[in-house]
Amino acid sequence: MRAFRGQPGIFEPAKMEKMEAELEVRDLSLAFGGLMALSRIDLTVRTGELMAIIGPNGAGKTSLLNCITGFYRAQEGRILFNGQDITNLPTHELTKLGIGRTFQNIELFPGMTVLSNMLLARHIHLNYNLGLAGLFSPSVRREEVRHHRILEEIIDFLEMQAIRKEPVGSLPYGLRKRVELGRALALEPKLLVLDEPFAGMNLEEKEDMYRFLVELNEAWGQTMILVEHDMSIVMSISRHVVVLNFGEKLTEGPPDVVQDHPEVIKAYLGDTETI
Image (cartoon, rainbow, N blue to C red; front, top):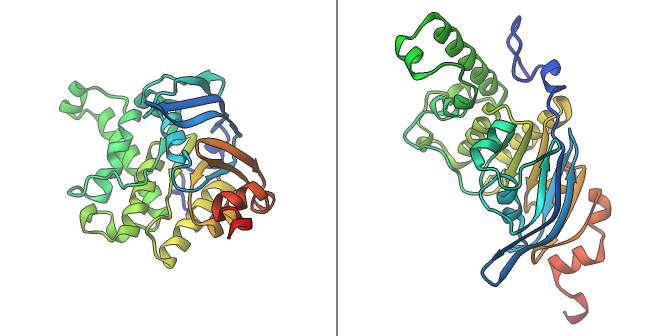
């Protein structure tokens, strides 16, 4: 990753060492009326880990991510982040604590440029108020330069220099997914939650996204939770896999162990004895 010379960057190793991201989900249950979306889910994510959550459609994967990131409120159970109970915290508080995410359906502002979309994510790191911003004092100018430097570093890493001033709505789908990853990184998350980041991409776009995520995790220690349907990607990129089915956890473990688990094979392929 290419950081700016002579200045501490967002991805400097010294900074990444402080990115503790210990997540614990305990006995989490979520229901919508009489429909049980999640039933007594337990999982643990350690700092520096890339965990994949897989399962058939309707297994509860996105519901679990929505609970972790504050979009849903579970009826039972607890979620701890770095020892703090975050079960009922609103999304903006979780963002300040260091939990960022991308979405299944791209949530960008299509009429704004790539740079402007990413700049929106920096609001949680602003150290000046509206009055100082209006005066555009020297301290505000210095901070604006700092925020733009961080964004340019992310743009450089994600190889988006050529589109940085393009309206997001004019970009092909794969590049918009990349912009959404960039905006999530602009939050400087300790835990990055990715909901189907490879969905809808062609092979070349998937290869690029794979390369970015591997470098983030292996070279810079970014902790990640990944929901993805492409099993070839899941089995090659993740260190730990959790399998959900009908809102329950079937199993978890290393990718090579999980993919041969009989209950996992049954969940994806059906009962082969009846075929």
